[in-house]
Length: 179
Image 1 (cartoon, one colour):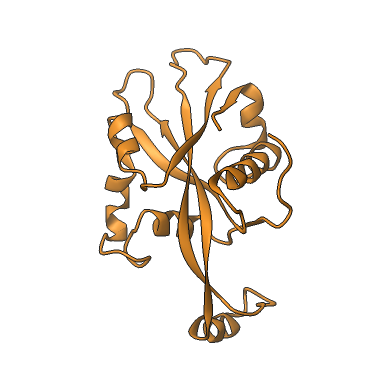
Image 2: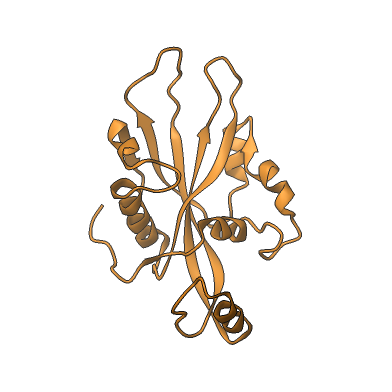
């Protein structure tokens, strides 16, 4: 994937990144968080993909090699989009210090363009109709472009454990980089 920018850092809350990028209530929109399942699930992959943020680019696909009994192997689709986030100015030494966080959040902020890596995959069983879902995977800050963010996040995804995919997940198939 090439050299990765060392200035890039993981965005602290991937779920906030997702809600912000998709304009879900409380994060810059009138859409309610209770609408999140409607925004992020469909029986039609194309319908779900067409509702991605405008600046979304497809960055990778993954197809597992091994098939379990009574299973249809399904491709996973990865995308990157950007979102704006207002960070408190100054360094917060302890993110568990809620008083400090509250004080900083009321003070001056700097807006940054950050990036979100998300995935659309079919979670249906063999004999069920397609059930496509969109899930957040990772988010980062300090990347200068979608491509730079993609390289960093895919490197993190394939080399370190994360909440969505175990690190060995990508050793069991072919990850095709599209950028």
